[in-house]
Image (tube, rainbow, N blue to C red; front, top):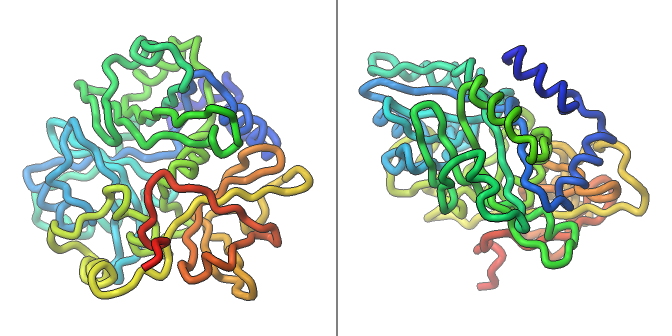
Length: 361
């Protein structure tokens, strides 16, 4: 991590937030009508280049790399031979190859495993140590041109990308956290991922005095609200792609050909019945939540009746002083019975996309 970047985060008091400060930040974020900018230095940016880069990645990842370009990013998965997800990178093309973004806690193992299969291929894989990611969230009430003044032309449509020589701006899935706190008239908010060298990101942050600065926690909350998963160390090898709805967010291809775990993934799609899927829940308590419980973290368990392992938490974040928003993979058969966590009943929220597994035959 760049010392200059750490110093900048410290100047905005965004490093090492306490549980109370996290709750306060996320409550303010969800209710805000301002454009907001978040630090994503907790993500690692990896560059894959070489004449065989496309063919190599096509044989390793579960989405169709042929559709990736400097103007189109995608979510994709990296699976074990048993179809279990080791990582969930976001990948975007650039003139010389590809850039992948994924959580720093799974990046070393991802790099090690991916590098094992390079062998004689003309492929170079490296971490961009001098690059960092920034998240930008538009407000539904923001004046037109607010973001353009700082970012230039904005890509339209989820995962479309605007690319320049040393900057890439990816339109991300919209945030719905305002609606989840019951804010009247709340609309979804456009979100963007910006990949660039640290020096460029510092210029953006320091020059955007009119933009509220936030920690990475707001990005986690908004991903939960959008039904967008992330594979972190706590849930590595916990799910096959369909369990976290990859087929519903264009993160999984069934026509691209072979990759590790492809037979398992295809068998579930065509021969099996999906027994687990991912949902968004709200957890409300009578008294303020003062800390994360052991169950309200990635890898925590959800209960349904007497079944204490009816679901697995993908991620959870405070929505207010007495509410959590939880993204979890749950047993489809337990939907009617309802779910709870830490003895608190959960409210299932509408997903931003349809869940076919909930449709009555």
